[in-house]
Image (tube, rainbow, N blue to C red; front, side):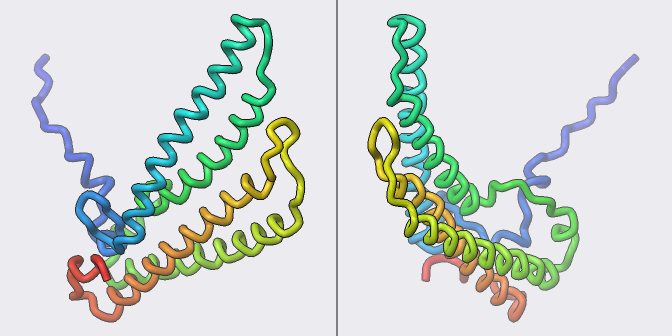
Length: 197
């Protein structure tokens, strides 16, 4: 029995949304505000550094227990702090790169103006949510005066990661909302107008 030799579909078409292109921050193609591109690259380097430090910290504790029969209490605490920073910086970088999971079945089938109305609503809701998180984060920072048990690191150093993440996501969401407004008002605006300003 012969199996027909049919070509595989191009999977890039399932991930690339031409409607979303004016809202994308792309460090390789220099799309989006330069500040956001630089911050995204910086966050990605910090993420790599944190990941290496996390691996070293956890490995040191495993080796200490298995080989030296002595656990390193500071390694567990350090790993927890690194993991918290990794989560929030990773969330911000993923938002900038449009890498969070999304259901875009509807928006991909709409005309550009209607799609950007949905993008505008989405980013206004994200901005409002980040505002609540920033406000709550500042409340936590103002009330937290303690230090970690073993390393003595101020808890505010750990908690500030949430606020920084929310501030960055809110700034990007506001920029994307503005770009959607431009697309709604003038659908003929080309993607080149969404670069550095």
